[in-house]
Image (cartoon, rainbow over all chains, first blue to last red; front, side, top):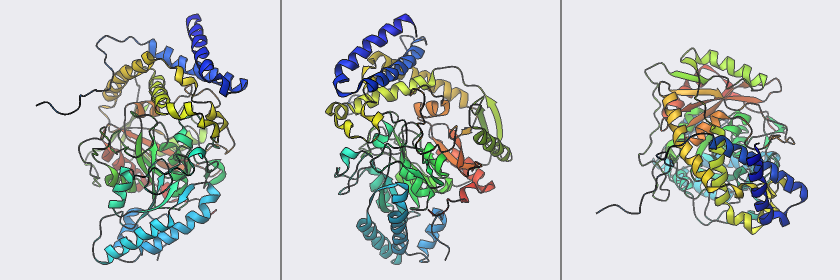
Length: 68
Length: 463
């Protein structure tokens, strides 16, 4: 994990700790940190792929109904 | 009369139509098995005895009057307990929903009723279809799902009861669901045939949502042929689910005229359990008798990361209110009580990046698969694991399952059929993964394999 990713992990961990810290034990909190790191590992792998402006999401939005 | 237990639907249906088997007696037989063996395997949530007998009497009367609806008329089945059923609890496998009734029938349930099939049970599943991040089998309100081949091992999940019930002969067939692995895994572990259809082939209306762009419903049954018959009954457009494919689907039992051309991703079985790999290699020898098999490479992309990110982000949203309500503290698996929290920190830009990369993944998979009828691989890297074992010893997302990541991320159909046993007597499976909308192609390949082997005719010892 790079220094930047480590910093990002800390910031995001603070977010989930703030949201849910009072619901879990210290051990569970540590497990949540590991899960978050795994999520960020995936994000890091995806961010390494160059995308063009024209690479749209593979998900199609369609307004309701049909044109006149 | 030969026992109807484990009889494929094609044969059972003929006997029902000719009056040699009574749907009422058949239903009684399966209800008794569900009531005796079902609890020992933790395979069943609710047995729908009175509804089943009512449906069976109706089927019997119609058939006697010459109104045979088709191959599923009078055939008993079970629904994974994430399919809504009017007047019957739908628990999603979760203790907090033990008595919850969603008072509507899922489209798949309606279609099977219209086909004349007899709903006998709501089947056990991993709580929230595994969407809370479980790491070991004791993650269901009905207890750890036990494998009929060895109750000290796991059925696989999350369609656990669907796999166990079909393998143990508690039902003729079951409907399961797959977001990532939830049909193929129990089909592999329980030694049955399991079909994951193309995304959108079967309406998800009335089914629990885990990940809107990954969820699929599909059958688990004795044979590939049975899976085709069942899929035809539940497939097709549904105005209640706008993602359904608009073209109706018909099961084609004809053998293709051309010799199938299959591909194996280089190294796909390298890290498999040695017995899994050995059975896979033997299966390939059989397959080479009727198909060409080539080794190929898939261009490098972070496939697992793409599909996992989509799953994480959509599940975080699908379960947001449930998670925030705190009711997950009442779930069975300790890890499910905190598992969904971490992914709530996933950034919107990362989810969108995954959806943009999904387009590249689809293009890559389409180009790679274009010359072939299907990819072939072991259905799982290992046979059923011990019932008490943490099967995800490393962090979720770190495991290599390129077939699952590409197949589910691209919405591709796949079928798992048994291909042998381990020394310990546990089944292993082989999967054929096809191009989108090509269920008939992979069904034909799987049927050809089952015509040359007898693994699908082996059944677990009576519990």
